[in-house]
Length: 329
Ligand code: PBG
Image (cartoon, rainbow, N blue to C red):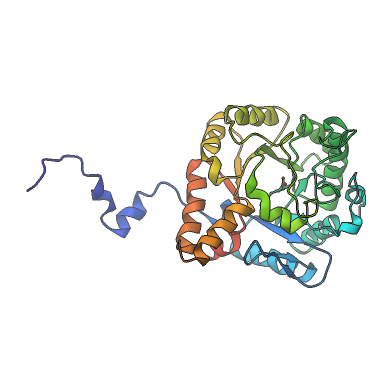
C-alpha cells in the first residue's frame, strides 16, 4: 500500500550527505569556553565528582592553555581554589594583587597572548562562608552595595592582571554598571564584561562547590537571596535587559541544559552575544549515567551541547570543551 503523500520529510534524512546538508545547528570549537580550576600546589588534584577534571598546578595549567590554542578553543575561564587558611569573612585575599588568580592570569597572557582569559568577579573563592559577597549584620544574607564596591576592586585587579573579559557571577544588583565605570576609571576601556546575567540558584553547582571548596564544612549554603528562583523565566529576561543597559558586552544564562527556554527567550530579547554555562552538575550527571552503562557517553555529551546551541547560545562554557573540540577536528 502506498500513501498518497506529497510531503515526505524523511526525504532529506535518507543519507548522511543529505542530513549534513540540511543540518541547522553546527557546534564549532570556537563556540566553546573551557573552565579550568587552579590551585597553588605543583601537582594536579583530581575532583572526585567531576571525572577527568582536576585542580591544576602551574605547569598543567599552561599545558591546558596550549592545548586550548591547538584545538581552536578561543577562551579559558580560570577558577582559583584557595586554601581554607587564606579565607576569611570578607574575602581579604581577593585584594592581594599577587594572589594565585592574578599571577596565573598574568602568566597565561604572557605565554599565550592570543588566548582569551576570563575571570569570575565574585568573592566566593575567598570567603570562609562561601558566599559571593560580604554578609550583612547577623549573617544570612549578602549585603548588596558594599559587595558591589568590593567587586569593582576585584574586577580592576583582574583587568590589571590581563583578563580579557571579567565575568561578574555574584548576582548583586547594579554591579555591571559599577564595574564598567571602575574599569574605565582605571583605564581598562577594552576589558569586556561577560555578565552572569541570569544565574539561577541551582543544585547543579554541587560538584563545582566541591572543587573550589565554597561549602561550609559539608553543608550546602543557600544563595537564594541573590541567585534567581529556578521557576522564573520572565524575571530572567528582566535581569538580562538590565545588564545590557548597564553595559554588559555578553550576557550569560546559567545553568544551561535545564534552562533552554530561558536561553531562547534571552536570545530573542537582546542583540549582544548570549553565553550559556553547562555547569558542573550537568557534566557530572552525564558521566555518572555513562559509568552505569545507562547512556552512551559521547552521544549524550554532544547532544547536550547541540541542544544548548540550538536554543540560542552563541558561546558555551563547558568542561567537555577540550574533548569535544578534539572530536570536532
Ligand atoms: C561562583 C560560581 C559558581 C559557579 C561558577 N561561579 C557556583 C556558585 O554560584 O556557587 C558554578 C559553576 C559550575 O557549577 O560549574 N560565583
